[in-house]
Image 1 (cartoon, rainbow, N blue to C red):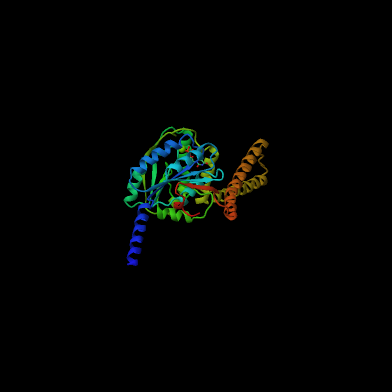
Image 2: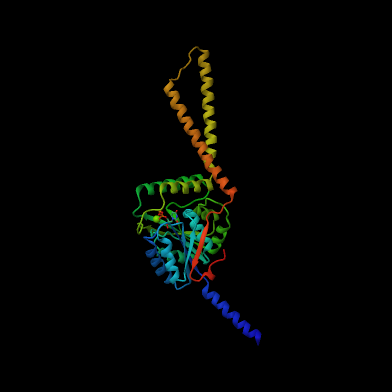
Length: 336
Ligand code: UDP
Ligand code: MG
């Protein structure tokens, strides 16, 4: 009899587990987003409620200095589906989405920006593809509204260069807005590398990938949190993580230069023999020297980028520091 009671109890616990099982985790990085966070939460909530399945929204506050944290704390107090991961300072967008993916416990994990440039409604289309059996569903921008010509141009040039330099293909006009299956998320979370270029890592992992198209909207409010300096850092992280070609290029370039120099030397010697020595003007000589020094320093700078990243790996510091995790029902939060 006792066994029957225990079985009943276990069945009930199992049923509760199934009911409480999180199907979708939505990861949202936040850096000074006080102007957009409430609207973003409302739109995400409406969309996710319409699935009639269990979900969670993991907000990662990347060291915001405005009211972002207090607004999300207040949301956490009334909505048990919301988690807030607070960083001890600003570590950057890629560390923020990495932390969100580690904290997420859903069967499918969606990464989306807070500023509503990526329309939350597209998540439903991503879920449909996931249900069809795809492991990665990335958002592909067919049009980018409200973005500067400079941003569109640099993005196009970067993806073209990236795909030429590396053996992996990141489709142009994609960002980090994507859905990944639990198994992709778990695999990604085991990769220990620092200076992560998450969209590159997901492409590199493989699995069954597909896309859904969308029109990238204007930022709902506020300004971009990706100034040129952060964009350059992201581009360098991407290229140095997946290609050694920039370093190899300077090796070949040096070799070619040496060959030209050697041939010129032999030609000059022969001219000398004939009593016909060519004399280069001083200003031309200085210009060539300046260009050569420039190229040498670029090469050293590129090597420096790789060396800094090797140093980061060997120091083995964490990608980010979490100051606290806030959750209405903290016991459901993953153990840290
Ligand atoms: N973000 C972040 N840390 C940063 C910079 C940005 O968490 O250091 C977040 C930001 O709050 C937003 C997302 O990353 O949710 C994308 O940033 P943003 O929209 O400013 O970039 P853009 O769309 O202009 O490239
Ligand atoms: Mg944006």
